[in-house]
Amino acid sequence: MEEKLLIRFLERKCEAEEARLVLQWIEQSEENKAAFVRLQSLWTAIEMDKATELNEACVRSILHQVRASRIRRNWYWSIATIASCAAAILLFVFVHPNFNRTPEYDYEALLNSIPSGKEITLMQGSDTKLKLADETADVDYQKKAAIIVNDTLQIEKDTDSKVLNTLHIPYGKRSKLILADGTLVFLNAGSTLIYPSEFSGSVREVYLDGEAYFDVRKSKDIKFHVKTAYKTIEVLGTQFNVSVDKESKKFETVLVNGRIALNGNERQIEIEPNQYYVYSESTRTEQIRKVDVADYISWKDGRLRFKEERMESVLRKLEKIYNINVNLKNPKYLTYQVTGNLNLKNTPEETLDVLMSILVPDNHLNRSNMYQLTVNK
Image (cartoon, rainbow, N blue to C red; front, side, top):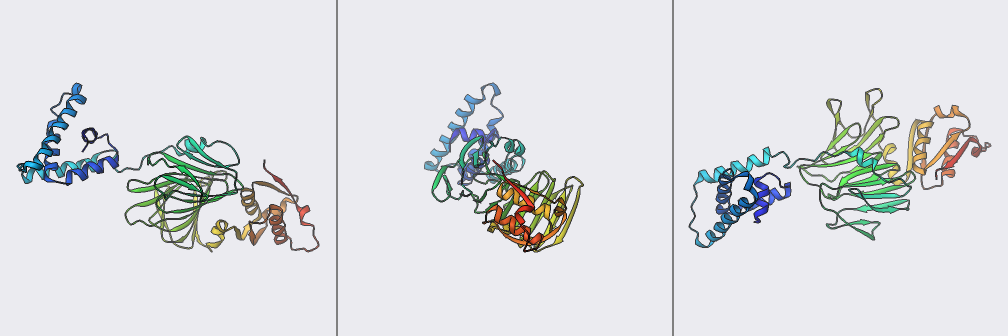
């Protein structure tokens, strides 16, 4: 055991992983337990102005005695001493303010630090690691030391759990992401996910701005949290879609299977499979109803399904997916309720022509005259 690591442990300055190493060392033998108790008892006797110099000498001396005792085997310690050591360990685990706690982050500041552009962007901390002009990107964090992009490109992974990664998907693009724990995430156009390279502690936490579909790898003891600007979703292992729209100040989620709980507004709400939940930050109102979940998750498979949805809402989704602006020449159509199933692999013009045929099923109508399309630069 390194002297400096023991010092950081006793000073309560070590990280959770370092603390686990020390606790493991303590439990390896009765001599280690006794040595730790002895170190604690001597700790308060050291003058603070000479702490660094004397602490290292103290730890080095006691560790030397422990190593020597394994040869002589002539140390005998009472049950009370071992119990005292166990109590000290429990005190550290439950009282230490930084042990096993999920750190608090300024996610909005990280969102604001994303460089502008039309490329898919991957950042580690404040460093931009990748900019992709591709329409889609597959990003995999399951390897220990590398991030794999589109099955070929490798990026060195920063495994410090405090360093957050940011994957930004601009309008007109999509991405599939596999987190370090095996959780699968589909990110829709105009979305950003913030997450660590490796999870640690008792909670796996990510932050979403936009829309994503999650297939969470189940863990009995480690919960998975999706934080957003308005709500936090708590889950053990399940499949669900979540959307956060800051322009309309709306939060939506639909549960495919499993169980999730929503935290916010000073109460917790549990959602069941095939239920849709919507919350408006503007009016502070919420609603839950039964739905066909396929209408809400079809986008990840290249389709856009909708049932009795306002034309204005459908057009807004298409604008994000294709990175376009659409103006209907007759504004009254914006309030129409439409039902359909669009193939997002088609061009914007082809998709809009199909949508116009749903809106006005007149075979003699020149539908291209019904709208004006502008591609964003």
